[in-house]
Amino acid sequence: MSIAFQATLDYAKQLDKEDKISHLRQEFHIPKDKSGNEWIYMCGNSLGLQPKSTKEYINQELTDWANFGVEGHFEAKNPWMPYHEFLTDSMAKIVGAKPIEVVIMNTLTTNLHLLMVSFYQPTDKKYKIVIESDAFPSDRYAVESQIDFHGYDPKEGLIEWKPREGEELLRMEDLETILDEQGDEIALLLIGGVNYYTGQYLDIKRIAELGHAKDCMVGIDLAHGAGNISPNLHDSGVDFAAWCTYKYLNSGPGSLAGLFIHEKHAYNKDLKKFSGWWSHNKSTRFNMRQDLDIIPGAEGYQLSNPPILSMAAIKASLDMFNDVGMEALREKSEKLTGYFEFLINQIDTDRIKVITPTNPKERGCQLSVQVKNADKSLHKALTDNHIITDWREPDVIRCAPVPMYNSFEDVFRMVEKLKTLL
Ligand SMILES: *Cc1c(COP(=O)(O)O)cnc(C)c1O
Image (cartoon, rainbow, N blue to C red):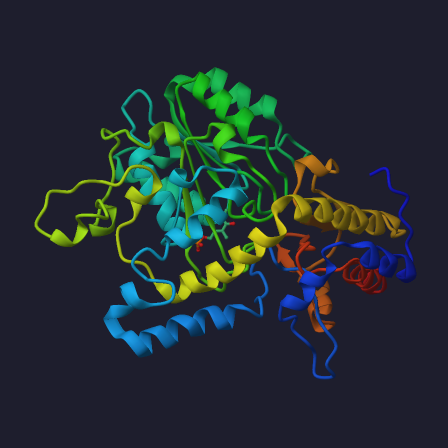
Protein backbone atom coordinates (compact mmCIF):
# COMPACT_ATOMS: atom_id res chain seq x y z
CA MET A 1 0.00 0.00 0.00
CA SER A 2 1.36 3.36 -0.97
CA ILE A 3 -0.96 5.26 1.39
CA ALA A 4 0.83 6.51 4.51
CA PHE A 5 -1.48 5.23 7.22
CA GLN A 6 -1.41 6.42 10.83
CA ALA A 7 -2.12 4.35 13.92
CA THR A 8 -4.47 6.71 15.75
CA LEU A 9 -8.18 6.69 16.46
CA ASP A 10 -8.55 10.17 14.96
CA TYR A 11 -6.98 8.99 11.74
CA ALA A 12 -9.27 5.92 11.60
CA LYS A 13 -12.27 8.21 12.08
CA GLN A 14 -10.95 10.44 9.31
CA LEU A 15 -10.82 7.43 6.96
CA ASP A 16 -14.44 6.67 7.85
CA LYS A 17 -15.40 10.23 6.96
CA GLU A 18 -13.70 9.90 3.57
CA ASP A 19 -15.34 6.52 2.94
CA LYS A 20 -17.92 7.00 0.17
CA ILE A 21 -19.94 3.92 1.15
CA SER A 22 -19.85 4.30 4.95
CA HIS A 23 -23.64 4.89 4.96
CA LEU A 24 -24.20 1.19 4.18
CA ARG A 25 -23.33 0.25 7.77
CA GLN A 26 -26.60 1.84 8.92
CA GLU A 27 -28.51 -0.54 6.69
CA PHE A 28 -27.42 -3.52 8.81
CA HIS A 29 -28.31 -4.76 12.27
CA ILE A 30 -25.01 -4.54 14.19
CA PRO A 31 -25.23 -6.69 17.34
CA LYS A 32 -24.90 -4.68 20.59
CA ASP A 33 -23.85 -5.41 24.17
CA LYS A 34 -26.14 -4.81 27.15
CA SER A 35 -25.16 -1.15 27.45
CA GLY A 36 -25.96 -0.58 23.79
CA ASN A 37 -22.38 -0.53 22.46
CA GLU A 38 -21.99 -2.08 19.05
CA TRP A 39 -19.92 -5.23 18.79
CA ILE A 40 -16.90 -5.29 16.53
CA TYR A 41 -18.09 -7.93 14.12
CA MET A 42 -15.32 -9.42 11.97
CA CYS A 43 -16.97 -12.72 11.16
CA GLY A 44 -18.65 -12.04 7.83
CA ASN A 45 -16.52 -14.89 6.46
CA SER A 46 -18.65 -17.22 8.54
CA LEU A 47 -22.07 -15.56 8.76
CA GLY A 48 -22.75 -12.13 7.30
CA LEU A 49 -24.85 -9.65 9.29
CA GLN A 50 -28.53 -9.10 8.62
CA PRO A 51 -29.59 -6.23 6.35
CA LYS A 52 -32.45 -4.26 7.91
CA SER A 53 -34.42 -4.74 4.70
CA THR A 54 -34.41 -8.56 4.96
CA LYS A 55 -37.44 -8.58 7.25
CA GLU A 56 -39.50 -6.54 4.76
CA TYR A 57 -38.58 -8.83 1.89
CA ILE A 58 -39.54 -11.95 3.84
CA ASN A 59 -42.71 -10.27 5.17
CA GLN A 60 -43.77 -9.51 1.63
CA GLU A 61 -43.80 -13.23 0.83
CA LEU A 62 -45.55 -14.14 4.10
CA THR A 63 -48.23 -11.55 3.32
CA ASP A 64 -48.68 -12.80 -0.22
CA TRP A 65 -48.88 -16.39 1.01
CA ALA A 66 -51.54 -15.30 3.53
CA ASN A 67 -53.50 -13.40 0.87
CA PHE A 68 -53.17 -15.70 -2.10
CA GLY A 69 -52.33 -19.24 -0.95
CA VAL A 70 -51.25 -21.27 -3.95
CA GLU A 71 -52.19 -18.42 -6.29
CA GLY A 72 -49.10 -16.62 -4.96
CA HIS A 73 -47.11 -18.55 -7.56
CA PHE A 74 -48.59 -16.09 -10.08
CA GLU A 75 -50.34 -13.37 -8.04
CA ALA A 76 -47.66 -12.48 -5.49
CA LYS A 77 -45.96 -9.12 -5.96
CA ASN A 78 -42.88 -11.14 -6.83
CA PRO A 79 -44.49 -14.27 -8.31
CA TRP A 80 -42.98 -17.41 -6.81
CA MET A 81 -42.96 -19.39 -10.04
CA PRO A 82 -40.09 -17.39 -11.56
CA TYR A 83 -38.75 -16.08 -8.20
CA HIS A 84 -35.23 -17.47 -8.69
CA GLU A 85 -34.97 -15.47 -11.90
CA PHE A 86 -35.18 -12.24 -9.89
CA LEU A 87 -31.84 -13.19 -8.34
CA THR A 88 -29.95 -14.32 -11.41
CA ASP A 89 -28.76 -11.06 -12.96
CA SER A 90 -27.37 -9.57 -9.73
CA MET A 91 -25.78 -12.88 -8.74
CA ALA A 92 -24.22 -13.27 -12.18
CA LYS A 93 -22.79 -9.75 -11.99
CA ILE A 94 -21.20 -10.37 -8.59
CA VAL A 95 -19.29 -13.44 -9.77
CA GLY A 96 -18.64 -12.18 -13.30
CA ALA A 97 -20.86 -14.63 -15.16
CA LYS A 98 -23.56 -14.60 -17.83
CA PRO A 99 -27.14 -15.12 -16.64
CA ILE A 100 -27.41 -18.49 -18.38
CA GLU A 101 -24.42 -19.69 -16.34
CA VAL A 102 -25.86 -19.01 -12.87
CA VAL A 103 -28.69 -20.25 -10.68
CA ILE A 104 -29.51 -20.05 -6.95
CA MET A 105 -30.53 -23.44 -5.53
CA ASN A 106 -29.87 -25.96 -2.76
CA THR A 107 -26.90 -25.61 -0.46
CA LEU A 108 -23.22 -25.50 -1.30
CA THR A 109 -22.15 -29.07 -0.63
CA THR A 110 -25.23 -30.41 -2.40
CA ASN A 111 -24.40 -28.28 -5.43
CA LEU A 112 -20.81 -29.56 -5.45
CA HIS A 113 -22.15 -33.12 -5.61
CA LEU A 114 -24.64 -32.34 -8.39
CA LEU A 115 -21.86 -30.64 -10.35
CA MET A 116 -19.54 -33.60 -9.88
CA VAL A 117 -22.24 -35.84 -11.36
CA SER A 118 -21.56 -33.91 -14.58
CA PHE A 119 -17.91 -33.00 -14.26
CA TYR A 120 -16.40 -36.00 -12.52
CA GLN A 121 -16.67 -38.90 -14.96
CA PRO A 122 -13.72 -41.07 -13.92
CA THR A 123 -12.21 -43.91 -15.94
CA ASP A 124 -9.66 -46.46 -14.76
CA LYS A 125 -6.95 -44.37 -16.41
CA LYS A 126 -8.16 -40.93 -15.35
CA TYR A 127 -9.90 -40.87 -11.98
CA LYS A 128 -7.94 -38.65 -9.59
CA ILE A 129 -9.08 -35.37 -8.06
CA VAL A 130 -6.82 -32.52 -6.88
CA ILE A 131 -7.84 -30.37 -3.89
CA GLU A 132 -5.89 -27.97 -1.66
CA SER A 133 -4.36 -29.72 1.35
CA ASP A 134 -6.19 -27.22 3.54
CA ALA A 135 -9.50 -27.57 1.73
CA PHE A 136 -12.65 -26.99 3.79
CA PRO A 137 -13.64 -30.35 5.35
CA SER A 138 -17.00 -30.50 3.56
CA ASP A 139 -15.27 -30.23 0.17
CA ARG A 140 -12.82 -32.96 1.10
CA TYR A 141 -15.57 -35.29 2.29
CA ALA A 142 -17.63 -34.57 -0.82
CA VAL A 143 -14.69 -35.37 -3.10
CA GLU A 144 -13.66 -38.50 -1.19
CA SER A 145 -17.20 -39.83 -1.27
CA GLN A 146 -17.44 -39.20 -5.02
CA ILE A 147 -14.22 -41.11 -5.64
CA ASP A 148 -15.49 -43.96 -3.46
CA PHE A 149 -18.95 -43.88 -5.08
CA HIS A 150 -17.35 -44.49 -8.47
CA GLY A 151 -15.48 -47.53 -7.08
CA TYR A 152 -12.02 -46.04 -6.57
CA ASP A 153 -9.93 -45.71 -3.42
CA PRO A 154 -9.87 -42.14 -2.08
CA LYS A 155 -6.40 -42.79 -0.64
CA GLU A 156 -5.08 -43.18 -4.18
CA GLY A 157 -7.54 -40.95 -5.93
CA LEU A 158 -7.20 -37.81 -3.82
CA ILE A 159 -4.18 -35.59 -4.54
CA GLU A 160 -3.38 -32.69 -2.23
CA TRP A 161 -1.84 -29.46 -3.46
CA LYS A 162 0.25 -28.52 -0.43
CA PRO A 163 2.21 -25.48 0.71
CA ARG A 164 5.94 -26.16 0.86
CA GLU A 165 7.64 -27.11 4.12
CA GLY A 166 7.71 -24.07 6.41
CA GLU A 167 5.28 -22.10 4.18
CA GLU A 168 1.57 -21.42 4.50
CA LEU A 169 0.55 -20.38 0.99
CA LEU A 170 0.12 -22.39 -2.19
CA ARG A 171 2.44 -21.92 -5.14
CA MET A 172 1.19 -22.25 -8.70
CA GLU A 173 4.48 -23.99 -9.71
CA ASP A 174 3.58 -26.84 -7.37
CA LEU A 175 0.22 -27.36 -9.06
CA GLU A 176 2.10 -27.38 -12.38
CA THR A 177 4.38 -30.09 -11.04
CA ILE A 178 1.44 -32.21 -9.89
CA LEU A 179 -0.13 -31.88 -13.35
CA ASP A 180 3.15 -32.61 -15.14
CA GLU A 181 3.67 -35.75 -13.13
CA GLN A 182 0.12 -37.11 -12.79
CA GLY A 183 -2.01 -35.06 -15.21
CA ASP A 184 -2.88 -38.11 -17.31
CA GLU A 185 -4.52 -39.71 -14.28
CA ILE A 186 -6.30 -36.58 -13.03
CA ALA A 187 -9.96 -36.11 -13.94
CA LEU A 188 -10.82 -33.03 -11.90
CA LEU A 189 -9.35 -30.08 -9.99
CA LEU A 190 -11.68 -28.78 -7.28
CA ILE A 191 -10.05 -25.78 -5.64
CA GLY A 192 -11.19 -23.10 -3.20
CA GLY A 193 -10.92 -19.78 -5.07
CA VAL A 194 -10.21 -18.03 -1.78
CA ASN A 195 -8.85 -20.45 0.81
CA TYR A 196 -10.97 -20.40 3.95
CA TYR A 197 -7.98 -20.78 6.28
CA THR A 198 -5.25 -18.54 4.84
CA GLY A 199 -7.46 -16.13 2.86
CA GLN A 200 -5.26 -16.69 -0.22
CA TYR A 201 -7.05 -15.74 -3.44
CA LEU A 202 -5.72 -18.00 -6.17
CA ASP A 203 -5.42 -17.15 -9.86
CA ILE A 204 -8.38 -19.24 -11.02
CA LYS A 205 -7.85 -18.40 -14.68
CA ARG A 206 -4.35 -19.85 -14.48
CA ILE A 207 -5.67 -22.93 -12.66
CA ALA A 208 -8.22 -23.42 -15.45
CA GLU A 209 -5.50 -23.13 -18.13
CA LEU A 210 -3.23 -25.59 -16.36
CA GLY A 211 -6.04 -28.10 -15.76
CA HIS A 212 -7.45 -27.88 -19.27
CA ALA A 213 -3.99 -28.35 -20.80
CA LYS A 214 -4.07 -31.81 -19.23
CA ASP A 215 -7.69 -32.48 -20.18
CA CYS A 216 -8.94 -32.15 -16.62
CA MET A 217 -12.21 -30.54 -15.58
CA VAL A 218 -11.80 -27.51 -13.32
CA GLY A 219 -14.23 -26.51 -10.57
CA ILE A 220 -13.97 -23.70 -8.04
CA ASP A 221 -15.51 -23.42 -4.57
CA LEU A 222 -16.27 -19.74 -4.13
CA ALA A 223 -17.69 -19.89 -0.58
CA HIS A 224 -15.09 -17.35 0.55
CA GLY A 225 -15.01 -15.50 -2.75
CA ALA A 226 -18.60 -14.60 -3.66
CA GLY A 227 -19.27 -11.03 -2.56
CA ASN A 228 -15.67 -10.68 -1.38
CA ILE A 229 -13.53 -10.65 -4.53
CA SER A 230 -14.39 -10.32 -8.24
CA PRO A 231 -13.60 -13.73 -9.71
CA ASN A 232 -14.75 -13.12 -13.33
CA LEU A 233 -15.95 -16.69 -13.61
CA HIS A 234 -16.90 -16.56 -17.27
CA ASP A 235 -13.58 -15.15 -18.46
CA SER A 236 -11.62 -17.46 -16.18
CA GLY A 237 -12.87 -20.41 -18.26
CA VAL A 238 -13.45 -22.70 -15.27
CA ASP A 239 -16.00 -25.41 -15.99
CA PHE A 240 -18.10 -24.98 -12.86
CA ALA A 241 -18.31 -23.28 -9.49
CA ALA A 242 -20.49 -23.19 -6.39
CA TRP A 243 -20.76 -20.94 -3.32
CA CYS A 244 -22.96 -20.30 -0.32
CA THR A 245 -24.78 -17.00 0.25
CA TYR A 246 -24.69 -16.78 4.06
CA LYS A 247 -21.05 -15.63 4.34
CA TYR A 248 -20.16 -12.46 2.42
CA LEU A 249 -23.56 -12.41 0.73
CA ASN A 250 -25.44 -11.74 4.00
CA SER A 251 -28.43 -13.94 3.19
CA GLY A 252 -28.99 -15.64 6.53
CA PRO A 253 -27.96 -18.89 8.24
CA GLY A 254 -28.12 -21.92 5.95
CA SER A 255 -29.52 -19.90 3.08
CA LEU A 256 -29.50 -21.22 -0.49
CA ALA A 257 -26.35 -21.46 -2.57
CA GLY A 258 -25.14 -20.42 -6.02
CA LEU A 259 -24.14 -22.65 -8.91
CA PHE A 260 -22.23 -21.78 -12.09
CA ILE A 261 -21.63 -23.85 -15.19
CA HIS A 262 -19.68 -22.27 -18.00
CA GLU A 263 -21.61 -21.32 -21.11
CA LYS A 264 -19.49 -23.73 -23.16
CA HIS A 265 -21.37 -26.58 -21.41
CA ALA A 266 -24.81 -24.93 -21.42
CA TYR A 267 -26.21 -26.77 -24.44
CA ASN A 268 -24.35 -30.05 -24.09
CA LYS A 269 -27.10 -32.66 -23.91
CA ASP A 270 -24.55 -35.45 -23.39
CA LEU A 271 -23.48 -34.10 -20.03
CA LYS A 272 -24.60 -36.53 -17.28
CA LYS A 273 -26.96 -34.89 -14.83
CA PHE A 274 -29.40 -35.63 -12.03
CA SER A 275 -32.81 -34.18 -12.78
CA GLY A 276 -36.15 -33.25 -11.25
CA TRP A 277 -39.26 -31.43 -12.41
CA TRP A 278 -37.56 -28.05 -11.98
CA SER A 279 -34.90 -29.11 -14.54
CA HIS A 280 -37.67 -29.21 -17.15
CA ASN A 281 -38.57 -26.63 -19.79
CA LYS A 282 -40.57 -23.93 -18.00
CA SER A 283 -43.21 -23.56 -20.71
CA THR A 284 -44.29 -27.22 -20.57
CA ARG A 285 -43.42 -28.12 -16.96
CA PHE A 286 -47.04 -28.33 -15.88
CA ASN A 287 -48.17 -30.56 -18.72
CA MET A 288 -46.79 -33.20 -16.36
CA ARG A 289 -46.82 -36.22 -18.64
CA GLN A 290 -43.96 -35.22 -20.90
CA ASP A 291 -40.50 -36.61 -21.40
CA LEU A 292 -37.83 -34.56 -19.69
CA ASP A 293 -36.81 -31.50 -21.70
CA ILE A 294 -33.88 -30.02 -19.78
CA ILE A 295 -33.44 -26.24 -19.54
CA PRO A 296 -30.07 -25.22 -21.02
CA GLY A 297 -27.41 -23.83 -18.69
CA ALA A 298 -27.39 -23.59 -14.92
CA GLU A 299 -31.18 -23.66 -14.49
CA GLY A 300 -31.22 -27.22 -15.82
CA TYR A 301 -29.50 -28.26 -12.57
CA GLN A 302 -32.52 -27.32 -10.44
CA LEU A 303 -34.41 -30.30 -9.05
CA SER A 304 -37.13 -28.90 -6.81
CA ASN A 305 -39.32 -25.87 -6.44
CA PRO A 306 -37.24 -23.63 -4.18
CA PRO A 307 -37.87 -22.17 -0.69
CA ILE A 308 -39.16 -18.66 -1.37
CA LEU A 309 -38.53 -17.32 2.16
CA SER A 310 -34.82 -18.03 1.84
CA MET A 311 -34.80 -16.55 -1.66
CA ALA A 312 -36.46 -13.39 -0.31
CA ALA A 313 -33.53 -12.93 2.09
CA ILE A 314 -31.13 -13.44 -0.80
CA LYS A 315 -33.01 -10.88 -2.88
CA ALA A 316 -32.75 -8.31 -0.06
CA SER A 317 -29.00 -8.76 0.01
CA LEU A 318 -28.37 -8.94 -3.73
CA ASP A 319 -30.38 -5.75 -4.27
CA MET A 320 -27.89 -4.01 -1.95
CA PHE A 321 -24.91 -5.45 -3.82
CA ASN A 322 -26.51 -4.40 -7.07
CA ASP A 323 -26.96 -0.81 -5.85
CA VAL A 324 -23.40 -0.34 -4.64
CA GLY A 325 -21.52 -2.59 -7.11
CA MET A 326 -18.51 -4.83 -6.53
CA GLU A 327 -16.09 -2.19 -7.76
CA ALA A 328 -16.84 0.25 -4.93
CA LEU A 329 -16.83 -2.60 -2.43
CA ARG A 330 -13.47 -3.90 -3.61
CA GLU A 331 -11.97 -0.43 -3.55
CA LYS A 332 -12.95 0.08 0.08
CA SER A 333 -12.06 -3.49 0.96
CA GLU A 334 -8.46 -3.15 -0.22
CA LYS A 335 -8.04 -0.02 1.85
CA LEU A 336 -9.82 -1.37 4.94
CA THR A 337 -7.84 -4.61 4.99
CA GLY A 338 -4.68 -2.68 4.11
CA TYR A 339 -5.22 -0.48 7.16
CA PHE A 340 -5.94 -3.52 9.32
CA GLU A 341 -2.70 -5.12 8.15
CA PHE A 342 -0.77 -1.91 8.79
CA LEU A 343 -2.09 -1.74 12.38
CA ILE A 344 -1.27 -5.38 13.08
CA ASN A 345 2.25 -4.86 11.79
CA GLN A 346 2.63 -1.98 14.26
CA ILE A 347 2.16 -4.31 17.23
CA ASP A 348 5.52 -4.65 18.89
CA THR A 349 5.76 -8.43 19.29
CA ASP A 350 7.24 -11.41 17.50
CA ARG A 351 4.27 -13.57 18.46
CA ILE A 352 2.11 -12.44 15.57
CA LYS A 353 2.27 -13.24 11.89
CA VAL A 354 -0.27 -12.55 9.16
CA ILE A 355 -0.28 -15.66 6.96
CA THR A 356 -2.57 -14.15 4.29
CA PRO A 357 -0.76 -12.82 1.18
CA THR A 358 0.40 -9.20 1.48
CA ASN A 359 -0.51 -8.43 -2.14
CA PRO A 360 -4.11 -7.07 -2.17
CA LYS A 361 -4.71 -8.83 -5.51
CA GLU A 362 -4.05 -12.19 -3.85
CA ARG A 363 -6.53 -11.82 -1.02
CA GLY A 364 -10.04 -10.65 -0.21
CA CYS A 365 -10.93 -8.85 3.00
CA GLN A 366 -9.87 -11.61 5.42
CA LEU A 367 -6.59 -11.64 7.29
CA SER A 368 -5.54 -14.83 9.06
CA VAL A 369 -3.44 -13.90 12.06
CA GLN A 370 -1.21 -16.58 13.46
CA VAL A 371 -0.38 -16.14 17.15
CA LYS A 372 2.59 -18.06 18.54
CA ASN A 373 1.96 -19.93 21.80
CA ALA A 374 -1.68 -18.97 21.77
CA ASP A 375 -4.57 -21.22 22.50
CA LYS A 376 -8.27 -20.72 22.16
CA SER A 377 -8.33 -18.56 25.30
CA LEU A 378 -7.13 -15.54 23.30
CA HIS A 379 -10.06 -15.93 20.95
CA LYS A 380 -12.37 -16.32 23.93
CA ALA A 381 -11.00 -13.14 25.51
CA LEU A 382 -11.70 -11.26 22.26
CA THR A 383 -15.23 -12.68 22.15
CA ASP A 384 -15.80 -11.74 25.81
CA ASN A 385 -14.96 -8.20 24.74
CA HIS A 386 -17.55 -8.43 21.93
CA ILE A 387 -14.93 -8.65 19.23
CA ILE A 388 -16.22 -11.43 17.01
CA THR A 389 -13.56 -13.25 15.03
CA ASP A 390 -13.12 -16.90 14.38
CA TRP A 391 -10.58 -19.36 15.61
CA ARG A 392 -8.98 -22.15 13.62
CA GLU A 393 -6.80 -24.72 15.28
CA PRO A 394 -3.96 -24.74 16.03
CA ASP A 395 -3.22 -21.01 16.37
CA VAL A 396 -4.97 -18.85 13.78
CA ILE A 397 -7.52 -16.08 14.29
CA ARG A 398 -9.42 -15.28 11.12
CA CYS A 399 -10.65 -11.70 10.92
CA ALA A 400 -12.78 -10.37 8.09
CA PRO A 401 -13.39 -6.62 7.98
CA VAL A 402 -16.29 -6.49 5.53
CA PRO A 403 -16.51 -3.33 3.39
CA MET A 404 -20.32 -3.22 3.52
CA TYR A 405 -20.60 -2.83 7.27
CA ASN A 406 -17.21 -2.61 8.96
CA SER A 407 -15.53 0.72 9.63
CA PHE A 408 -11.93 1.84 9.89
CA GLU A 409 -12.73 2.57 13.53
CA ASP A 410 -13.73 -1.11 13.96
CA VAL A 411 -10.33 -2.34 12.82
CA PHE A 412 -8.53 0.28 14.92
CA ARG A 413 -10.41 -0.71 18.10
CA MET A 414 -9.96 -4.40 17.34
CA VAL A 415 -6.19 -4.12 17.06
CA GLU A 416 -5.98 -1.95 20.22
CA LYS A 417 -7.76 -4.70 22.15
CA LEU A 418 -5.64 -7.44 20.61
CA LYS A 419 -2.53 -5.54 21.70
CA THR A 420 -3.69 -5.38 25.32
CA LEU A 421 -4.72 -9.02 25.37
CA LEU A 422 -1.32 -10.14 24.09
C1 LIG B 1 -18.62 -22.53 4.33
C2 LIG B 1 -18.08 -23.55 3.41
C3 LIG B 1 -18.78 -24.75 3.18
C4 LIG B 1 -20.08 -25.06 3.87
O1 LIG B 1 -20.87 -25.92 3.13
P1 LIG B 1 -22.47 -25.96 3.29
O2 LIG B 1 -22.87 -26.99 2.33
O3 LIG B 1 -22.98 -24.58 3.00
O4 LIG B 1 -22.76 -26.31 4.72
C5 LIG B 1 -18.23 -25.65 2.27
N1 LIG B 1 -17.06 -25.39 1.64
C6 LIG B 1 -16.36 -24.25 1.86
C7 LIG B 1 -15.07 -24.00 1.14
C8 LIG B 1 -16.85 -23.30 2.76
O5 LIG B 1 -16.15 -22.20 3.00
